[in-house]
Image (tube, rainbow, N blue to C red; front, side, top):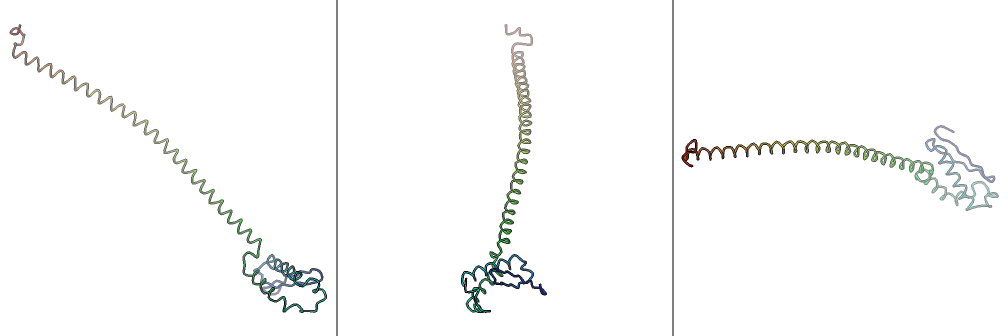
Length: 172
């Protein structure tokens, strides 16, 4: 390492691949970059590379090198581990949301069960009080009818008494 940079080396088949990256890139991305460069270089130049002179393929390989540098330094898909961690984090968030929804639904169901129990108790009390009110009105109706019958009998008695006398001797 030097200042804020790390040097990464990959040696394969007598060829040395070197990458200098800032510390913020860590180790995973630069080594993924080197492995990809090694694969592309061997695919393009293969056996010629072992007999080549220093920097012989620099001009031919420069566009590929620039393209890969841009890809690995700016594209999130370059770091597979980071992408997988992001996907796992997204799945985790989804699961937490689902669990929260299930818990909220459970709380709502508990609240509904509680309210249904209260409603059942209220319905029982209403039925009982309605029965009591019905009995009270029935007795009140019976008393009223009894009073009306008594008043009617008394009225008839008074009318007959006035016509026939109090001892009913005039009407015999």
